[in-house]
Amino acid sequence: MTTIQDPPAEAAVPAVATAIAVGAATPRRKDGEDTSALGRRSWWGAAFAAPHSIGLVVFTAFPIVASLVVSFMNWPMLGERSWAGIENYARLFADPVFRTVALNTALFVVLYVPLNLVVSLGLAAWLTPRIAGRHVFRVLFFIPTITPIVANVVVWRMLYQPGGAIDASLQSTVGVHAPNFLADEHWAMLAIVAMSVWQGFGYNMLIFSAALDAVPENQIEASQLDGANAWQTFWAIKFPLISPSVFFATMMTLITSFQVFVQPFVLTKGGPGTATETLVQYIYNTGFQNQQLGLASAGAWVLFVIILGITAVQFLGQKRWVHYE
Image 1 (cartoon, rainbow, N blue to C red):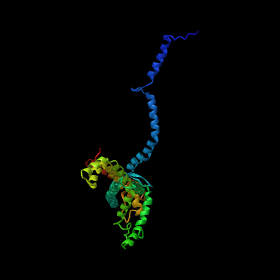
Image 2 (image 1 turned 135 degrees about the vertical axis):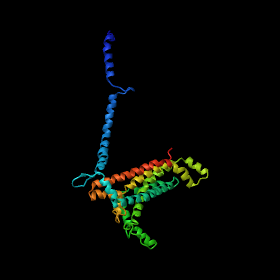
Image 3 (image 1 turned 180 degrees about the vertical axis):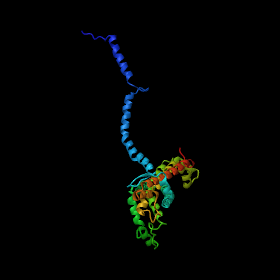
Image 4 (image 1 turned 90 degrees about the horizontal axis):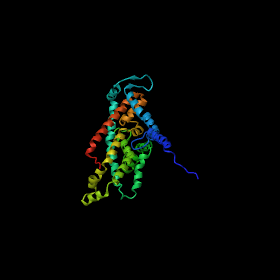
């Protein structure tokens, strides 16, 4: 009968020493995790993030830096380029057309932002769970927002034209002609604002509606037991609770309103004259029609500074009326 004997202790010593050496050679963190495996995972993470990071640098960071450099140069689309310093910015502020389009943009913002917020907040407050078919109404109100804006503008252009739907409705009801909205400098900007509110209120309406749905029902019931009516309940209970959503919607609406371009460009081409030309349209015309890329880049940076300044003021002032839980 064969007996299996344990190896002598002397033979086990080299094996144990080898294992200890291998374990000591493998770097480990304090929690015992293999740092080489951690490094491999880090490389995989970097590989997955690389396409987005490269795209961010190539299509966002580089154009931003390049436009800043170009804004200090005489940069025609064709021809020699030269350093101009702050000459482009001086030309901008001395240009009466630039001042006019800046005022046009400010007028659009002043009219559009409050109207958008009031309409969207009012509809969101109306679409309570007690309204039958509220989800259908939400979809209907949101459709203009997801419809291509150019298609919406073309439809509204047909409505505004003499002999269009608005003109025909006024003639049939009160027997008067509608003004030529797009050709009258007193009506053109108002027409653009009305179309823009119809186009854009659905997004904020959904934000406000979701925020109102999240208001605790017990707080509303407590206010009603205290004798508050619907108006008092909204402003004393609901509005403070949804104020972060209102602040977000206000900021996003302000930023996008300063960048308005398609509506005046398609509806009026900035006319009559320059009555509806905005800053973005001025930048577009300067860069691609007049082929002055340096001056257009300077205009873009002026617009950026304006938006940045207003955004900073809004963030500083939010403490007065925004209530975070």
